[in-house]
Length: 98
Image (cartoon, rainbow, N blue to C red; front, top):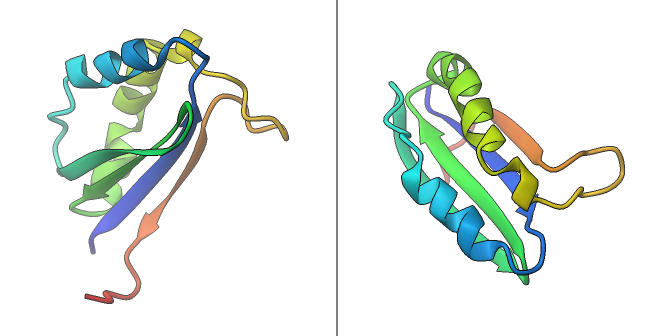
């Protein structure tokens, strides 16, 4: 069953270009990744949303996603509340609305 993950980021002032360029350069040709989009959600705030073939593919790609995060981690602000620099969630689709 199709799965999605979403990760929220807040970028340090003046580092947005560097953050976006790191994503452009990422070799995100991981097996099972169907689509990925970066959404600007506010000033210096972004969310990446990715669609996967299934949860197994998403789980298998986690080490690659973490390695990619490590390439731009220094551009991110701590989100507070014990979250660290990212707020990731993921799971299988349970209801298709359209």
